[in-house]
Amino acid sequence: MTPQSEASRPILLIDDESAHRRIFKRALKKAGISRPVLECSSLGEAKALVKRIAAGEAHAPVVAFLDLNLGDGRGTALISALRSAVPTSGIPILILSTSSLERDVEESLSLGATRYLLKLDDPEQFCARIIEELHTLFTPTNKPLND
Image (cartoon, rainbow, N blue to C red; front, side):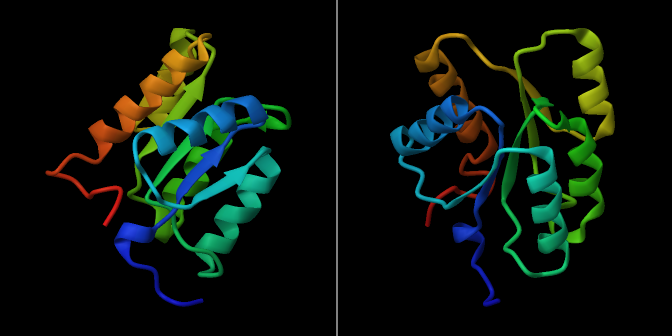
């Protein structure tokens, strides 16, 4: 695998809902962000990808957006895997969820999530929220999302 520049590191998106993945990619396009997106639609698929990243067989993402409630398990199970793999140990992990339960928020943050975002019912509002978070994460004082 060839080395990848910081500016071209991918964004990791783990969500079992194809509609949410489409909204996310639309938000990236609207924000003018041209990074590749590593998509996983299940916890099992995401765990396998994190193992490949840890082994140096796949590029480490610059940030991970992780659905809390996946069809084959809870996204919180992946937080520790991301935090324990050297290439992903320091990346921002943003939980995306329809759950506003305080215990879900507290569990996610205590396990190492950076932020907890509620998925909004309105696709345009959800898209705008993602764009806002991306710009918050990657301001001029942080690493830019594009070259």
